[in-house]
Image 1: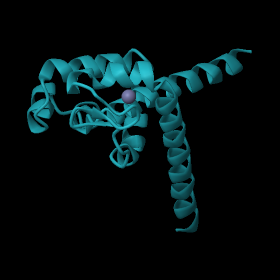
Image 2: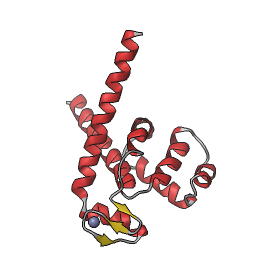
Image 3: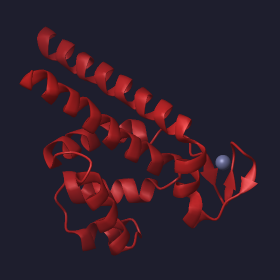
Image 4: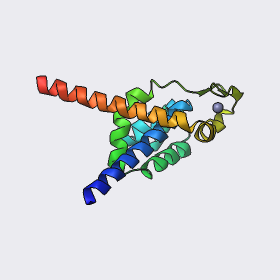
Length: 148
Ligand SMILES: [Zn+2]
């Protein structure tokens, strides 16, 4: 039972992290995602990473805190690393103060809560797509390794 519980926990943690990352991309906060990447994956200092992408340091720290409260830190780092290329391809739904889904003006600062409340289905769908793309890329890497 222990292993089944662990597996279930891993699935839940993975989903929570991917949904959080998907939300940031849908809200057009790729600057925050890139700062998170340099901070958590490349081990740069929060000051350095936030300055590079013009993100507030407090905002970067709070995003990092939210992420590591969703899953164990090594899992967060692994998922961020694997998901990054696909996150950058996600088309934002709130852009330039406007939500493309419900066609209403949304202040940039309210983009994330708006999407989290009104467009939960899109977050879930985007997170699932991320999961599929990560799985496919891992499989492709294994194939390359096997044939080399
Ligand atoms: Zn909307």
